[in-house]
Image (cartoon, rainbow, N blue to C red):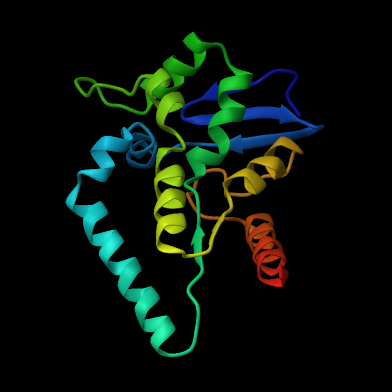
Length: 178
């Protein structure tokens, strides 16, 4: 376990609870966390998403079932708070800059900080309005990382075994609610 957080060629390594948490961000996923709510809401993609979710709800109800929306967060949504807390603003901005080739404008860390949870909030508002139960796994996965347990593979955007266990446990807990 390193004594202090490091960033080396795209890989963050952060000591947490006597474990070394390692993670890398993928620029396209990181960029998604910088989009303001109004831009998402006005997009064709959001319109199609809303239509699809409403249709899925109708189909479920027509067949005697209910629809549950489970929000699976991007790795960067889950690990970003750890990165912000572990590195100075200048260090984190330099690390983010590493991911972008010369000539491409890197993200500003302030923008990611401001918009990291916009999609979660937008979907939560939609689900409340449409009466679709929603389980957002973001905070639970963040809690695991804060306890020193990686939930995603270090250099891959997919859950590892711990991430799957967290999702299964939270889904079971959600479904057991009265």
